[in-house]
Amino acid sequence: MSIVLKDINPFSPLIFKTKYDGWDFDKVLSKAQELIDGRTESESLEGGDSESSVSNPINPHKCEEFKDFYKWLNPILGNVSKVQWDIHKETPLIIGNSWVNYHNKSGYTKEHHHGASVMVVTSYLNLPKDGGFIEFRDPLEAQRGFLVKNTKNSEWKQVKAETGDVLIFPGWLRHRVQPNKSNEKRWVLTTNVDLKV
Image (cartoon, rainbow, N blue to C red):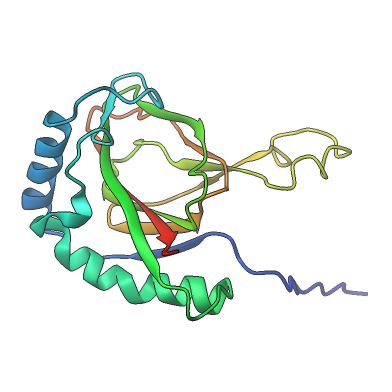
């Protein structure tokens, strides 16, 4: 007797992955370094050898070097919010802010969420081999508390990616980034997407 099981999850998916092939990496990474250099303070969420441009008043989404990416991204955000997540179709989205991070060897990002942002977009400008992946905390962790803890049932789940990949997920979903174990910088562009109220 064979057993056939089908995943019939009726709930909206939380995390989406797509790929952007339009980067001019030399130009974009040069601008990313400029944004890092123009920061006004270090970001406490970044650990090890890492840095963020989050305190720089100039956001990547307002820079010419990133313009084509955001033009490409716009209809995808509309699909996720209005088709996948069923957000009211008349409610417009806006980009609240954006920034770049780099992580040298040992660099990582601590556990956090993005508060009231409707969605977060993580775009890998450079993800070297052994550069480390993002991990998401299981939002049903408390409900799964009766399970025997082992690596398969860990409350943290990694999402593998490569350079050019783009992840989209809700702002309330807690996440962190593994340490970079390579000798090459990991570069990430992050964008907060909000409802225009």
